Every structure is written in structure tokens, then in C-alpha cells.
Length: 588
Image 1 (cartoon, helix red, strand yellow):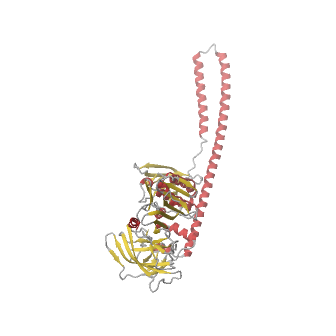
Image 2 (image 1 turned 60 degrees about the horizontal axis):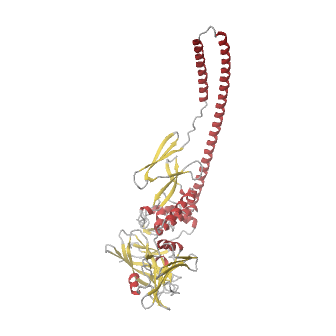
Image 3 (image 1 turned 30 degrees about the vertical axis):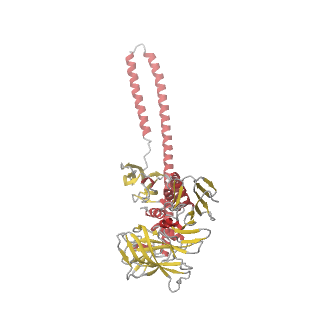
């Protein structure tokens, strides 16, 4: 496979643009094929196009005697919608040219779903030189700020400008026609390598400053806690001493009073009536209560005054009443002695957790990423971590500052969901989320507040069963074909094979997306063997999840066996590469 270079042939008037291409070489015949990835920059749905392909060798010289080009027609059966990149449904044969290392595409006509046609006419092609951001650190920084499709330095020409996504635009276009980024922003922020280096340095300094302030705040909170503990100990000691003094005084008074009253009573018992004695006792009790009350007042005078600290006091969530789990989230906080509220509407109930154990809790908000191929129950979620900035009185995205959350909370929860899922596409999406979280931990992924980057990442990697293997009762189908089919019936379904040759039997070969090669062997006209390869372990697992538990398992080999067919997944020479075969189980 050969990737396109940084010099592109562009027609700014064309409603579709070539984003990239790949060249494939057949291992059995040596023939070369290409697949093309287009993007639709118009507001209509593209159904097909006609283009001229120019072929060059490794030196950039034309291939062929006098003519190094061929015309081809490309159909998008499901339609190419606006701003959605897509590979051609079938590979294009370049077998008339040898030693191809580079191609250029000139789109001549474009057919839309309303049957209207765009013609190239007098519009002109021009070459644009794209300068890739080769430095890995700078590239990851730019991707983190601008998005994962940002790969090139922005550049200004006399009457045009190049965006970080690689699109050439007219100077009077204030936003990129491909990615909608602002012209002034990308030219200011991403055209100069030295400026980007300075921005990286400044970002690291800000990060270090945030960490320093967080550490200072943690130390301050610890000092406040220690001070409170000392005051509590001090006041507790004072109160205990007062209680002890009052207790001793009261005990002594009561002892003396009892002794004196007993002697007095013995002397007057005969002459004084009982009522007078009760009256005297009542007076003594009143005096005692007054002394006891004074003791209580003395204890209360030692209470500690509260220390007022800026910060979150409490949080609350009120459900909106629907079944989507969304509602209004309120943060109650104290700032400069005043108690205030901050409300965030229509969000999923956040998780409030002290991730770094510094006494200050962070706010984790989950966002549902809407992908058209999933139902509500299967929609993926991405978590972002926020700090509440008391000074600004707003939530501040800080996901990259808390990798421990993704390591200890997010990734385990996604792995659990992945393990519980039986849907291959959903499992693949969960794997993409896990990879994004690991990239964040490693410093290679920086989420944005609108979740655009993670959404684009999921859309780009959205995948169903690439192998297209199904089972009906005891019959297996690979891309809709199976053993015993007539080759002419297969050609009606898949189109003419990309290659045909004969060894011990007749062989037909088709090339599909994802670098897959489908091989069908047949005798006179009946297929007796089918193979599909090569693919990675994830693609195999997705297909096996659909098929269920295999009949037999070996090391790197899995068999599904019915009375009439045997489907076998097995590893190739490379440990990360696999192939599937469909054959007669009674064969050798």
C-alpha cells in the first residue's frame, strides 16, 4: 500500500475532492489496483463521477508510451453526502501500467441524486504543495487544539490559502470549504512552526502553573484542617477544665451545705415547723441553680467561630422528568463571603468525585455521542472532567489534568460494557473509546468542550462487520456468496472479478474495502472453495460475535462445522493477520 504525497492536484470549482488514495498489488499476479477516498463539498448527494487517472513512477515521471492516463467511472451506490468522506465501492484496476508509485485524479463530471450533472468545462487544475507537520509533539498539540484531521501547516498564497486539514480555499472564503475552520484563526495559529513551538511551551508552563496552584491549594486546605484541629483541641481542654472546676466547687458547696443544714436542723428540730424547713431548702435550690447557670454561660463562651472559605458548598440535580436521564444541575458555592448558585441545564446527572484526593471534588459529565448506525441503547458515551473556577464562576474543562479518572473509572466501565455487548459494531466503538482514553492518559488526545474531536474519531472509526459473513441454518455466506453457487450468479452479485486465472481450477478474485481480497475457486461453473483475507483480529472477533461460539477451537484457528460446510478462521504468517476459508468438511 502506498500513501499519497503532499503535492495534490486540485480543482477548486469541483463539487467533490480527492482526500487520499491507496495502491494495492496482487500477491498472485502482481497487478496494481487503487482505491480512492472522496469528500463531497457540495450541498447535494453525489451518486457517481467520471475521472481521469494519471500514473507516475517513483521518480515522478509519466508511465506509458505517450499516454499515462485512463478514464474511469465511479458509482456511490448509497450516495456520497455532504462533508462525509468515503472510499470508492470497488477498486480500480491499473493493470496496463507497471511500476506505479503515484497517481493524480482529474474529476471530469459529477452526477447528483437529482440527476443534475456538474461538468469540468473550462475550470482549471492547479497543484498545491502541502507541508506536513512532521514533528510528533507539534502535531499532537495542533490536533489537540484544532482537531484530529489537522495535519498540515496553514499557508497563505496571493489569492488563496491552505487550511490545516489540507484544503485549498479562495482568499475570499472566510471559512474552509472542507472543515469549516476560520481562515484568520488557522493562518494566525498554525502557519508558523516557531509560533506553534512557543504555544506548546506556553501551554506546558500554564499546565505546570495549574499544578503548582493546585498543590498550593491542597497545602492551604491541609493547614486550615490542622488549624481547626488545634483550635478544637484547645477549646476542648478549656471546656474540660471549666467543667472540672465547676464540678469541684459544686461538690464542695453541696457537702458543706448538707453538713451545716444537718447540724442546724438538729438544734431547731423541736421548735421549728416542717413547712419552714421546706421553704429554706427551696431557697437553697434556687441559689444552686443560679450558680449552675453561670457555669453553663462560661462553657458557651468558649465556642469556636467558623472559618469562611471560598469553594463549593453543595451540588444538586433535578431530573427533567423524561426517560433520557437529563435534567438541571446546580452548584452552590461561596465566594468572598457570599453564597451563590450556578445552574447548568439539560445535562446527564454528573458524578461528583475527588479524583486526586486533595479535598477538592471534581465534576464529571457524561455526553452521549450520536451515531446514525446505533439505537439509543447502544449510543456511546464520553466522560469529561471539569473544575469549577470560583474566580470565573464557571466550569472549566480539565480532562487532561485527571488521567487517573480515565485509568481507574472510565476505561474499566467501558471494558465492562464492551464485554457485555453482543453487537460487533458497538464493541468496536467501545474499543475506539478505550483507545482515546489511553491516548489521553499518554498525552496524545486532548478533548474539546463540545466533544467534536471524540465525535469525529468515532465517526471515522465507525465500523460494522467488515467481513460480511452470515449464516442461514447450515449455510455460510461470505459477501453474499456460498459453495455450490454458479459463477455467473456470483458475477451478477459482485460484478466482474478484478482478476481471473486458472491453476488446478479456475480462480476469480475481487478486491474490496479494508484491503480485503475475496477468492472463489470453481470447476466448470460451480464454486467449491471461497477464501477472504487478510484482516486483523478485531475484524475476526466482530464476525465471530455474530456467528456465535465455534464448533472447534485451536491455537489461532476456529472452525464452524455443519453437515455440508466448514468455515475456518486461521492466522496467517503474521500473528496479527487472519484469513477465513469456506470449504467442504469432507475435503482434505
